[in-house]
Image (cartoon, rainbow, N blue to C red; front, side, top):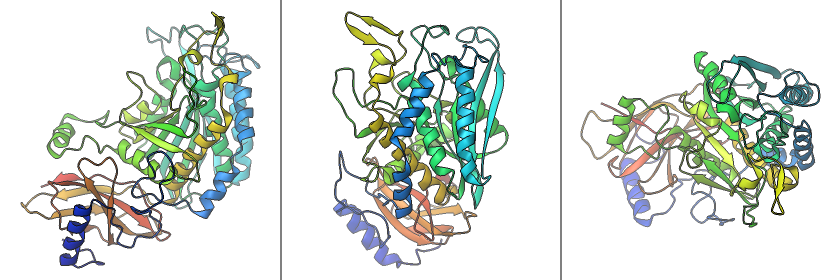
Length: 476
């Protein structure tokens, strides 16, 4: 196997042993990555391999406009209800009016892209399901696609759902303002589309407002199926759902935290893959978990002003969101949600009861908080779409018993690809802690036993931008 060209075999063993004994972060001269002595900024501090935001990214974050986010939310609330079963052709009330307004806004924002951003309606008829879809119903997603410059075949999707509901999930007549759930997520996605329309990411970005979430995740599931049928390389998907308030039901506030839900055992795992996972201990290393770790590395910092709290679950307890449709198609996906929900202001009839106001009303939104959530999404999406793609076909060779770890992978096709790094961590560590530069190679041998730690591989471009980590599978 190829050796690390920047470090002799004997000294690499010394480096790894010393690093493991110290429990610290070993960076081997990697630029742009924070080390163990990095200043702890807030909460639990930045992740061990935090990537510093570039000046370009910091400039993009400053362009996000809180007033526009608020305007978007207020407009969505003004449609009275956006229930999936509500009117599709009333010009002022119902989901059809909301759909047409989102389309018009996205189209207007796309004008700044010089044709690189295209906006479309993606529709289909959902047949009755015996539950929340009682009659054939048109489900329509509004999609703005910004084509990548160097790797357009690689996609990253960010979504919010524009449908709303009240206590009875099939009550399409009552007012359902849906300010937090989920005008907040749609507004963030629309503002990101506006800002990114002027940029030229290397990979393709898709900004989408989906429908049918409250009736069964229908819009997002349809989108994910179409991508899968077309063989689309979706390397990351985020849904923003209930991201509009930092206030809990007891009145306490946590304005600097956003939760990111990421599954462990993959939803689409096959029985054979499950057997392999149990044999190698990969329960905490799904593609969704690697995506979440990446978000922490690039978006938990002073530039966003936010602590990204990763939750090791697919979603909240026994609940679901639009990322699940992508997980079902074996795409990496995760869900952003505010730190503490107030259930009096979601899925509730608008009413006053015993002096308490119920309903998902706009007065319970925190627009400064939404802006910071938008910054987290923007930092994550820009970092993904300007870095190389996640390495593919990463394997640990197991044909011979050895205390070394032999890794191989396919070389990416990005024109600015500079090489690869091997990352590792103790099996009890939640995040990657150590990194070894191996250069522009497709194999390497590490003087550590795969029995004792977890390894991963990530790509690096000439500007020092790093991809999410790929967790290797065994190959005999």
